[in-house]
Image (cartoon, rainbow, N blue to C red; front, side):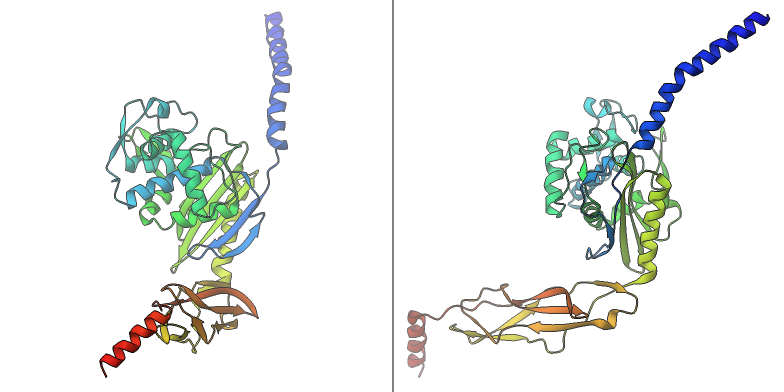
Amino acid sequence: MRNLTLRRILCIFLAIITLTPCFAFDVSSETDREYTFCEILIEASGGAVIESVNEDVPVPVGTMAKLMTVLLAAEKVETGEWSLDDKLKTSSYANSMQGAQIWLMPGEEITVDELFKGVIIGNANDASVVLAEKVSGSEENFVILMNKRAKELGMSNTIFTNCNGYYDDEKQISTAEDIGKLCAELSKHDFLKGYFTCWRDFVRCKATELVNANELVKSYKGISGFKAGYTDNSGYCIAAGAEREGVMYISVVLGCDDKDISFTEAKKLMNAAFSGYTVFVPDMPKDIPTEISVKGGLTSEISVEYGEVKRVVLPNGAAASVTSKVIMPDYVYAPVKKGSKVGEIHFFRNDKVIFTVDILADESAEKMTAQKAMSILLKKLLTF
């Protein structure tokens, strides 16, 4: 009996010695991994950057790629091409996805509503593919559309290679600045807010439970979304937006080696914005002209109009430091096309231009020619 006990102890001891090196290697690989920390804080409506660190440095973003998948699907709903009640069929390829999933079976039909839940709340890779295939016919075609839309949004340092970011996570490249632009565009789709701010839900007749990885939806005041994620190559990432009193700020934090740090930093950025900054629309200067003279035209003057005045984000108490000045010539030469730029309004803060508003021709002015001058003269003579 005693020999049997000793033999068991020896076996356990040998097993520990054998397994320990593998365990140590796994821990070391995670601990030694280095990420590039990047962050940005912007005001959503105008995109004004308030704070940033490495905001334009391209880094792996992994499953944050799903935000573009959501945007392209949301645009189908907004245009009326899709209804949230529409049912989409699951392909064998969608069923083959690994990682986070809602366990869709080949041929299974599921509503667009539940697919949004699966992707946004559950980070589901299979649900992402179902949406992508419906938009473009295949994930390959969808990736082309993802990158095209990224360029349209000014996401100049972004590359997507698939619709969910789970595979080839080191190849899903973007920046804090670009993800901020993507989230600002997503914030325009009001119907998405219910998905983005949901902590827990079910799909597939309550067979699959979903829990949001973005823990800020449980407690942060005014939270609007968007996504938290992790892959080996991206580290912990979060893009979060919150709105209070009609003002939305978006914080993006990428490349954290600790989940709690990513949430803490995102909250810190938004707290600083809500407590320390003011968003307002500056007044137009009082001496704005309503017309501009035209030389060499069939008409001697034309009316003008103005572009949109941007919302300005400034530290509390700094609004009084904003001034403006009209920059416009005394006249322009014909021909002038309606909508063409004829001047600018410069808005300053402490003698530094913070933005400009274009002054535009509100009507066209044709150029005077000898033939047209003769025609005008003849008409006057005939009516004399």
